[in-house]
Length: 365
Image (cartoon, rainbow, N blue to C red; front, side, top):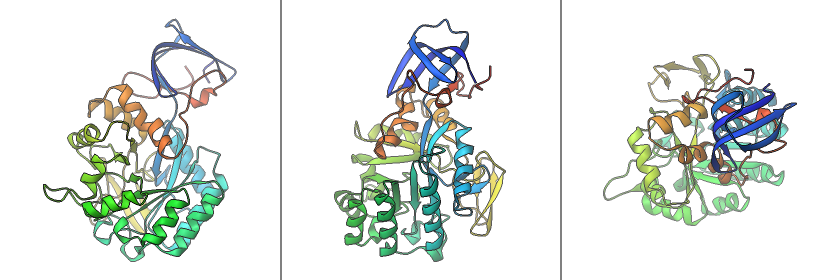
């Protein structure tokens, strides 16, 4: 590990982008942070680790296929190597037993390996907007799921649950919201009126905006249009495959000032792993940067948040001070977590060093 002084052209810490900082590290911990540029070890950007709220897999492992503590640890380790320090492992539509096994696995390792909770994406989705989710397991919100989420929240575990609001019983939805889970609208055919009603009932987030929802039109903005212009949190996949760069910028510029907007990877097992994996017993292949199933449909994303940051700056045209919160502080805010900081006592492993092409600089100079 680095032991000495790092000269950083930019330091991102505690929600602030600071120019020309020297970070001295001794025995694996930050000793001091001060203005200056004389450090022997140089980096374009030193940042806190990224936080990803939608991680289906990594390192060759899918949470649905290996809903065990070891499976969760392997996914977290794969993303940690790529700069993402905190994740919500994400279980997608499946049999109740698989969802419950994933919940128990995350509960067993939460607080270690950067696992901050669980994201349950489905099965309470619109069949018309299911994407790659298995059709036979899709069902309306039910008591079993509400009780599972309530049990996780009773253990003080952070939970995000993605559902189609138009398929959720209002009374059960109210219980989910009251539990303190982050309820997110996604994989939905909700009309604008249904979206507004859902946000009024406490749904405070939208999952991978644009994807798996009806497109907006001049007379029917739908969930998409209402989300962009509301103060709910919105997540985006920024790989240039799921959403065009121009449409990403449109959403970012139209979203109300101060309303959370964050990036997710929607990563699958190929991130930090092989070029294919199995989901629902079917092979998913990485082809020209796309993950596709046998039907040719997109099946998650092959990207991490470091590449996401690079895309936001180089393809979307965001300045660092606008792009960095989307992969660090904004997702943490959505989950009720404070920003990470680089300060005296911070472990050197809780810093990411990057060059001006956003490549990670190894910790061994």
